[in-house]
Image (cartoon, rainbow, N blue to C red):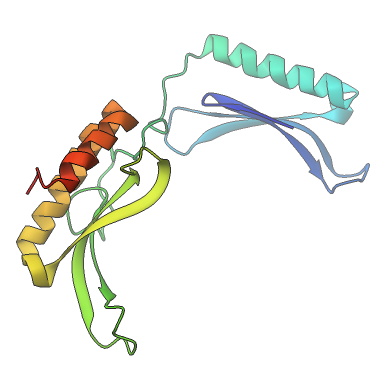
Length: 183
């Protein structure tokens, strides 16, 4: 059994399974407000007397916490992770979600000729599907180093602006992008 929403979750823990020994109970977990940091508390069947009583205690604990600590969000409800900290050392673009790498042509079976490109990552596609892992590419041999980088950064900035408005705005953005309105 799992109860989940954006503010917290209650999951069942049985380790090892089908054994009276070990850890058995309900775990409450919710975000602390710091990205990727969670508070966790276990409500043991043994301590509360039964599986049902432990679940009731876990639900009461989570509900009490929700009432005393309003949900402020961690950014996880966004389709991308805004960087509040300095960028990683290996980020050469100066922009989250924009990167430089290479691939090989499908016909290059021996992988002798690298094709360098600047890419922009996005997680809501043109159909409004969320949680996808997609990217657009601008090849250096076609656009030149600086223009390829500029196009990737511009694409990412426009995508983020649309993503903040929701999936419908992202659909409209991709429609305009595919029609060549941003060239």
